[in-house]
Image 1: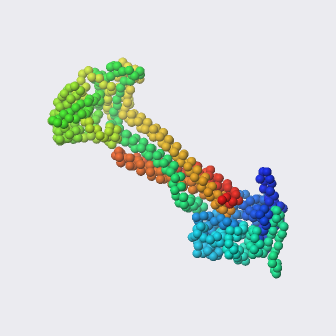
Image 2: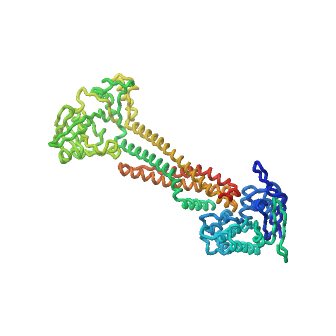
Image 3: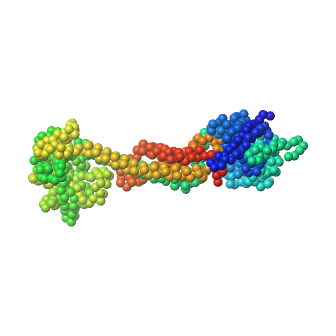
Length: 233
Length: 404
């Protein structure tokens, strides 16, 4: 299995003028293709900062981040947009669907920016929505459906361009327990089909769905446990 | 393809906020409609005036003597002797020479009394005034020479005074100034005034206009301000006119620069360029409202961008490039202002068309004006939408996603 993510000596320092915040300190991390990873930590632990860097929404202050063989630090803004579009599927805590736009159109969006022709786009969007169990809600607007359904649309959207990694930032944070379980089961299913899934969470129950838990504290990676064949975490 | 998607996106965004979009367009609508209405009004007037001068004939000219200090004495005026002298010197080059004299008069037949003007026609009246004669005929040169008491009445005036237009040979008592004369009707004409003339002279004119031999109202010793003449078509109007002007200066013992000669052609040219200039100035003022409209668009686009900060963050996280966001908002503002321009154009043309119906004039709307108007409004939209769109495109996705 090749490495899909390689992080070496990663540092992120926020300079807010008066105070410098060292959010990530000398982080070294490797994730292989097909893994099912949870990144855990309290607020301020650096997990959200790492998530933003993994998702190419933010740049490290120093160190290297290689995603699917691409050294992200060397990329210009246009290339970064390309990476966001093609390599990363983002799922947010607050869903972040485009309002007043149908489920179908929402799932099509990454493909629109990926310049995929209309017919192909439409077919794939339908296929993905069916895959997440929302084949009967293609034309519904975000305000007409439940949180759990919204998150499933977001997952379908994240898969639109066959990304290298699926990045989920507290995906169950705004969901009730049954919907949370639904979404995590969906991730598990996708992972079995070969999708690399990375979930950032502070809840142990959610992390328990995954196969590897990486813990952060005060900007440092303090623990990296894999689920053994017999043992639980 | 993305442009097509952005167009669909812009249209749906406009549709969602119909009232707001309409109010934004309003500045554009008012600006464009007023520019088109004013420019078309000018074009309509100019075309009507040009047609008017066509009727009059391009061989007509007149001259008068100007006093530099504004004080006029008798020697600035023309007499019958002056006219005779000019006739002798230039008779071969002119087809008409007269004073365009007119006199107030009152006509009475039985119980019907009518007030109006008598206009004098000199020899060869057909050259000077193209009257549509229904009954009888124009004056002969002998009629003019002998100052015969003849009159040519307008159709409607004849009906009012006599109850019929078959009145050639009848007489009518006319009071001219202090004199009372019995004039014989030798002809009846129909007024061919264009809509423009009717507009300028006032359509409620109840005064009559009748034609008499000039010599009848221009007795010996009379004076006139101007000398009117028509130049033979084989000669150049400007050339002959200037020659006559120089001659007049000599015989009246005045400076050549004091004798002002105007040809109908030149006059029309002057009026036309004046109107053109006026239209342009007023049009420019109306164009200022276009700038105001553009500012309104910039304002609303800024609001729209701020409102959709989070959405912009989502799009960027999904892989939208800076130029994708830029074009999304630029297209939206271009569509709003182009739509405003189109509506404004329709409104402007509508106003001109309705106005044209009232004054019964042929309305002129040049297609170039329409095209320029719509293109200009799209440009204004893009120009004023640039700053908000750039602001949107530069947004940092993390910050934008945090925005409530």
